[in-house]
Structures are given as C-alpha cells and as structure tokens.
Image (cartoon, rainbow, N blue to C red; front, side, top):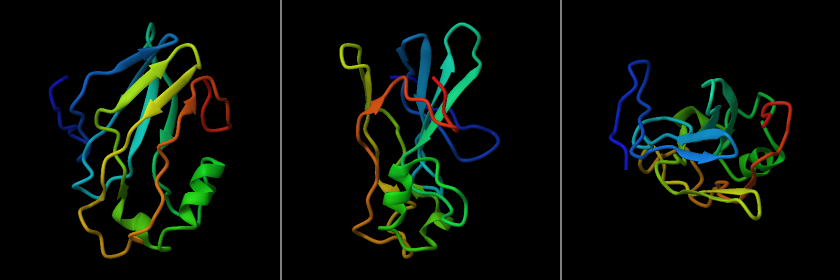
Length: 140
C-alpha cells in the first residue's frame, strides 16, 4: 500500500499505490468522509498525460450524465444528494484481468457519513469496466 497524501487543492487523498494496466497508471481516491464524489482515473504510463476518468456515483442531475450507468444510478438518488458528494470512493480495491480486459473497481461507503439527503437504497456502480471503452468523456 502507498501512503496517504492529502492534496492541497481539496480533501482528496489515496491510501494505495496505483494499478498498472495496458500502458496506463490507474488511481482512485479516498475521502468519502468528506463531501466528495468518488472516481478513478488513468494516466499514460510513459508521459503522465491524463487518459480518462470514471465516476462511481452520480453527479449533478441537471448536467449531462457521463454514462448510461450514471443516469440509471441517479434515478435511485434524491435529487439533491449530489450536493453532498456521494462518496463511493475507490480507495484500494482495484484489479485488472488481462484475459477479459476488465478493470474491477471496488467502492467504499456513501458519504459523507450518513448523509441526510441520499436515498439509503441508492445504487452505486461497482461493475467491471471494459478497459478500452471509448466514450465522449473517456478515451483509452
């Protein structure tokens, strides 16, 4: 495990080392005890250039959703839950299956803590992700 490092720009931090897959360095963030929205992101292993980012919980429903999964998950959340961040941080549980070309991402708690605005039955997305998926917001 890597050491935790708080980023000066906010309350995001990580408790693990990155995962390496297909020339990408994949990292997730911790911090669901704060009002953050969980995500994991990939960077080119050679250049460090940003490659893509996936969120694990829905964001502001007045804006376009990043994926169909986020649209479906948003339907299970209170309309103002996104204002509290949502949690679902990816603070360690990632594994890459090269044979299936899938990145498995585990998520932590909803957040921050027992939020008053989130639906207790709300869905988060922790399903396998095709590593080379291409969408307008993510390119492999």
